[in-house]
Each structure stands twice: as C-alpha cells, then as structure tokens.
Length: 106
Image (cartoon, rainbow, N blue to C red; front, side):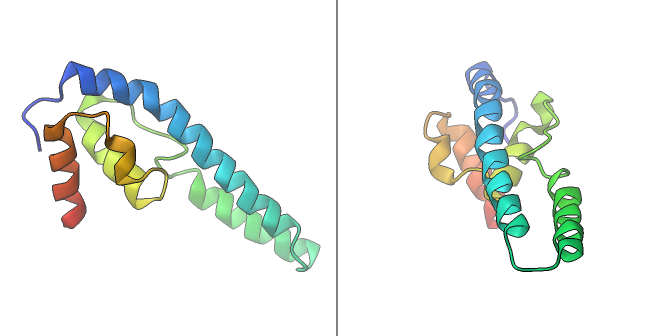
C-alpha cells in the first residue's frame, strides 16, 4: 500500500466515483429489467429481484465509503465487482496503479 495517496489521485478518484457508479447502476437496472421480463411467475420475479437488490445495494459500485484511507480498497472492489476495468485507471499515478495491481494478485 502506498505510504500516502497523492492529492492528484484522490481528487481524480472523487471525480470518477459518481461516473463509475452511475454506469454500474445503469448496468444493474438493465439486469433487473431482464429479470422482470423473464418468463418466470410474477412471484418468482419479485423474489429474485428482491434478492438481487439486497445483494447489489451493498456493493462498492452502489455505495462507497469515501474516505481517502479506503481509496485503494474501493478501487480493488470496483475492479473485482466489474464496475471498472484496470484500463479505467490510466489517468492515475503509477504508484497507485502498481498498488492496485499487487492487491488484485492476492
């Protein structure tokens, strides 16, 4: 873990999070529509959707602890949950990218 997150990376992260979350939530909404449009019974659709929403609402792509000390952990969660890809970090500093890559290997 880097000793300190650069101010540039922290500022960029705060700018990117709402964009990343909106795109992720839009993806989730499309998946919810697929559930509702399935041929399952209305009750099955309801319970499947309820289960998915309860799971999804806890993911970093929906709700994010915006503390600087959690930034690297949040980025790793964004990547592992499919919110972003490693390419989405291209504007960030090399130290941060290396740290994230190292954490993803574990």
